[in-house]
Amino acid sequence: MLENIDILIVDYEVLLRRALSRMIDAEPGLRVVGEAGDLVEAETLLSEVRPQLVLVNVDRAAAAERVIGNLIAHTPGIRVLALTSVIDPQAHARLVTAGAAGIIHTRQEPDVLFKAIRKVHAGELWLARYDMAALVNGIVRLKAADEQEAAKIATLTKREHEIIACIAEGLRNRQVGERLFISEATVRNHVSSILDKLDVSDRLELVLYAFSHGLARSPERSYSAAGRDIAEHRPDKRVSGRRTGG
Image 1 (cartoon, one colour):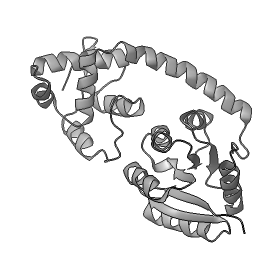
Image 2 (image 1 turned 90 degrees about the vertical axis):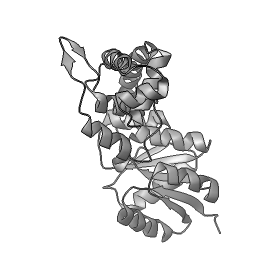
Image 3 (image 1 turned 45 degrees about the vertical axis):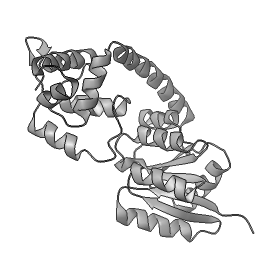
Image 4 (image 1 turned 180 degrees about the vertical axis):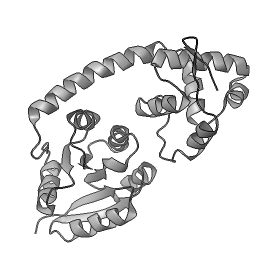
């Protein structure tokens, strides 16, 4: 009798996660050893149940490629299969670059999913009916775009990195100043500089940029604190060609 492939499912929708779990468990040779609703829960389960493969629904994951990257960093050697309803070469290129060993569309039949799981577990790359040329071109374009973003990020000072991390926590300018022992006016000046350097329009866009580019801790605790404060403290606007802090 073949040994089971142990699988951890990460899906942010409980009903869909449970349905997917039951379907996979019913397939001989496949076994769901854990279910997670977010990255924090997934990282805990990785240590507890030690799955061989993670099936993650990236459609409902914030910063999906970072989720995949964090899963792999937490458990080197783990195989990740991404489940998505999106047909987008650039998005798929990001997932593969982040470390996904396979991408499968939600419209596929269960048998295709089972085959993909087995292929990915065996060390193969699964792209189903994906156009390989489109994927390669997407990775090339992604590399060029990432180099441009890396150049922007390289212009940030140490203080600006600290301020970005504070803003990502949902802190307002006054609170940032208190934490870093600088004046609120100085914080505003730094925020204006940060927005210009990264070419983002306001604090909300800055937070999203920070999460997606690793400038702040992944928001798996949810956007509650940051999102609430940012929404209440709306946004930094351009004034005479400059952006000002809120």
